[in-house]
Image (tube, rainbow, N blue to C red):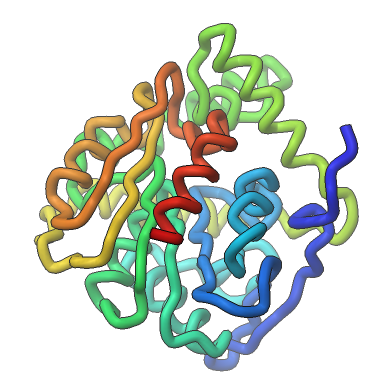
Length: 280
């Protein structure tokens, strides 16, 4: 299948953030509110589904980036979501933006919530996918689930995301393979894989987020689109329902027979929903 130029060929660029170099990629229109993509556990620039990036970039500027200590970005990865959020805010400001939309997936969704609480004027709209609130049910169990599924994937010669992000039904397995293959479409200028230290620090940050006291989400007044699969094992799907209930201006989408990576499994439907939400 021929894939049009897009995220697969977007050049990796660098920006100085308070003396530390951050790696990023930008594509889409020159004008409009940029959509900042906030990535998941263990992910670098090449872990974004190109269909999701290209779909949203068809109408909106999109910026993906490696936060501190991840991939090609310098520095030490923090051990708290709050510190990750501060770094993301610094990156956004260093990139010259004073208002953005946020698309936070999984760990990125935790970070997006903190950004909206700490810098409400910076955020116009948010999409929170495969994620949950501080203290959410089962979030502190991410480490054993991740390590067990990674071991299972190693023994079966598969990508861990096939187990972590998708259901094990026939449909889930097929769409998992398609997703993993899409991640391989970019062959040049690929990002550096995450280091073991950065991965461990992210796991510690997620564990702390899962043990935190719940935040008062009524202070987040921005429009929010909450999306997930209905069988998320990493951040159990009831957290998405809880998020949508506690946010004053939120709408919930749960995709059937889908796991943590529901937005990738149903990428066409998700992109349509996301564009309608961002344009409304």
